[in-house]
Amino acid sequence: MRIAVLSGKGGAGKTLVACGLACAAGEAVYVDCDVEEPNGRLFFRPEQVISRPVLRKMPVFDAEKCSGCRRCVERCRFNALVLVKGAPMVFGEVCHSCGLCAWVCPEGAVREEGLEVGAVESGRAGGIRVVTGELKLGEATGVPVIAAALEEAGDEGTVVVDCPPGSACPVMEAAREADYCVLVTEPTAFGLHDLRLVAELMRVLKRPCGVVVNKAGADFPELDAWLEAEGLPVLARIPYSRALAAASAEGRLAYRQDEAARRIFDGLLRRIEEAAG
Ligand code: SF4
Ligand code: SF4
Image (tube, rainbow, N blue to C red; front, side, top):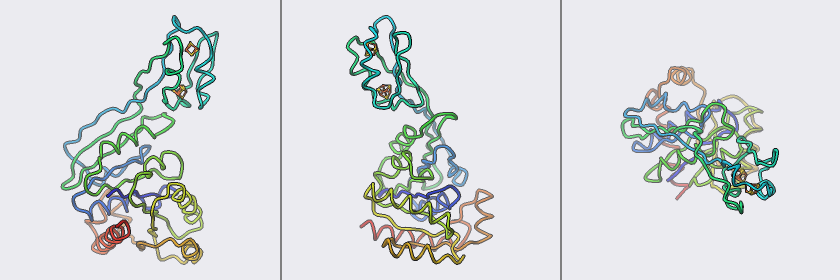
């Protein structure tokens, strides 16, 4: 079963919940797809870590063969190509590595080369395999690294995906094949605003989902009213606790530090398993 853990913004407690679920499963794969800032490994401290680069295909143009016909420029759906002095030039940040320019070129003037955009690490922390995607600084999109991390994780047993924050393309890539999605929020106006965006994404992806309210306890009835109106189940409420906050700040796993947290995550995993069938 693949469980994706999402939140509309950073700092809502997504990694806390994803790590807690992996610990509750005992034997599991934890995949950190928050590739711009992967920090799950700081909690698990995996050993025997193996790293491999992630490459993205980029078109390279052969000036000798190119006739300047513009076909590649006109067909590129992402407007990633321009013709400069009769030769195509690619904007790497916009290119989606779709390969169409090579396919349509009548002169065979386009070849694809691998460009390193990040890395995927895999290691073990007891019964948990820890897979981490890490985007190279300055790269525009984490999608290829997320795809590589998910491929490395496989789909045997329980796979917990720590998604990037937000509701843009990288989040869709991380969550689109999940059996169940957990939306982490907090009882504030900002939390509710971001939760609405992620809930909208769930409708687009047609994934079953439920909500975890982190730092619960503060009075914010608008959140419960909205959840009820949307028919979104609350899977767990994690009360704010100084002990938990301190454990997280020191890179200690809440599940292994705190009996109350252990009960919450065990119950959460059970509810997800029941809901996902
Ligand atoms: S690979 Fe695709 S997105 Fe990139 S330049 Fe070629 S056609 Fe455009
Ligand atoms: S399609 Fe081929 S020949 Fe035409 S401009 Fe592009 S690279 Fe040059």
